[in-house]
Amino acid sequence: MPDNKNNAAQYMHVITIQKKTKIKDPRTGEITYDWINHLTDIRANVHFLSASERIAASAMQTKITARIQIRYRTDDIDSSMRIVHKNKYYDIHGVIPDNENGMKWLTMPVSEGVISE
Image (tube, rainbow, N blue to C red; front, side):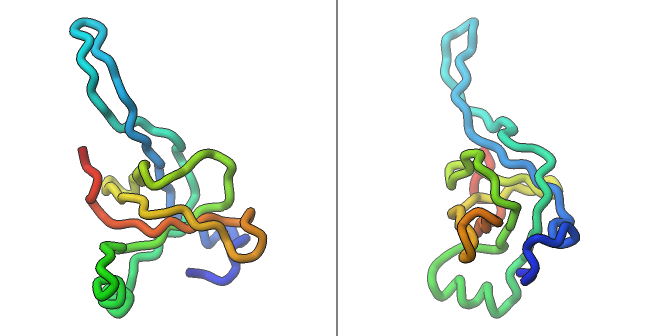
């Protein structure tokens, strides 16, 4: 990940964060779940793991394939949500604040295609 987290050029990707929402069919009363956009057009830095990082992650039995970093925001983002980037879905494994004061950026370890329903 880049060292200068305040540089706008570091956030050159655009992501959408979705959350799973309960939907009730007005005709039948049936409850279903669907993904809806929670946050859209979020500037982000998407860093795919190198081969050695993937091997290390595999040894720790995690399926992390990338880290996605965004500027700090107060919106609720949690591991029940997913990220859409370039028409691919990424399961969020956690939301980690920065080490400086916890209010500069958030890093989300993600895995591709785990949550797709």
